[in-house]
Image 1 (cartoon, rainbow, N blue to C red):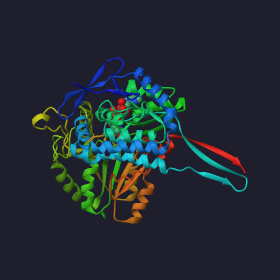
Image 2: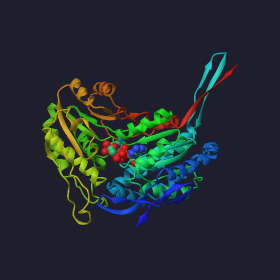
Image 3: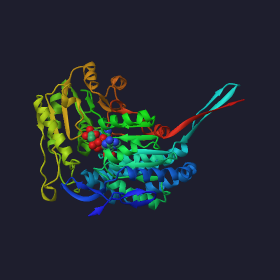
Image 4: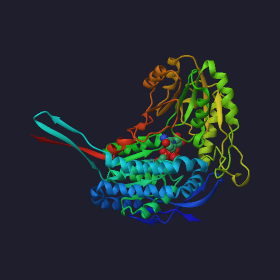
Length: 480
Ligand code: TXE
């Protein structure tokens, strides 16, 4: 069986313990490869390699760092088909999605930061005829990057690209649920000529490898994307150590549809924003609020289209919905459908495991699910489900929908559909969220700040925000 290996000091190596974990293909429900069950010893080796590489990498001219990251981006593009297939097998997402979104976006992340770092400039503050201050932004040392399973290579590269571009070395841990493309990336790093030790990838379980990275005294910054509970745990360790922390956590995003919207555009985008990647994107809109005059029209059209969505083999180009990432996650999502029924909800379509013929007969699939009849403050509408399950609710006024939209502990993203510009601006100002999409969804400009308010996280990624996170500002004051 194929063995995934760690990438430490430029070499592909097994874990010190010699132990491996099973890695599943969720669309067939079977183990298809093995992943290192690494521990604190492997993290220590990776940290030492990164620390040793730091003095040279941190003073390598930006143009040279940029050139290597550009080459890595080119290699990702050149291997698009292979990487997309691997991502689809590992995660369960349709190969067409991996090919059009995940893998191209991973290449864009490297390309974006390879160019951003050479465009980046710092501030100067002049005190009239007394003195001039200028800000130096220096790389810090070894960065710890911990990423989740939903957009494996996409979110992994979103962290390591700015960390490397700004001159840090990295110890990274991809999710143990979807380790494959990070492993394939390590081979491309070797091919791209990334110097030994600059990037180290340690595979394994969160409580072992992730914990060891978080606790390591010589890893002074942690960039994490994942669940809010894990984020809280990481913060409780990192904060007393005064580490720099960037936390991208969960969401329970509202999708607010006014009666004056462009109905057709709204409908097709709402299908995507509800069910792309089987609803396993932290930005998916899982609570859909519809202005009462178009509630019945929306419900009929939405249910009709969603009930015809093809759930099937992710390898098939016509599949719109692939497999859920793991059996335990499928069970968690389905338990929320039971909860919704207990809370008085009516399932309009879906609500159960989908059975797929052929080689996927044992796979973990769920029909896209729409539920109505729930109050905005019930658990189903307050807790993150992170699967293909949405609720629909009518509303009458802007004040009412804002109150319901802002009622959760999360504040990641939100979507508003209206042709009224003033209303759009009002909603954008009043929504408690790090991102507001008006008449669109997941339209991403990589220069913009990305992240959430409230329990959706701390700090922002994206654009120069990430370069600021991965550098230490130093003010130099010179008296005239
Ligand atoms: O996340 P975890 P999981 C949410 C979503 C999902 C839930 C759990 O609600 O159901 O999180 O998903 C590592 N110290 N999101 O299980 O456990 C872990 O190995 C250090 C939202 O994937 O938070 C993995 O690499 N690290 C989200 C990473 O943390 C630890 C995307 C994320 O795992 C650790 C995915 C520890 N003690 C899930 N324990 C988003 N916002 O994008 C685990 N990890």
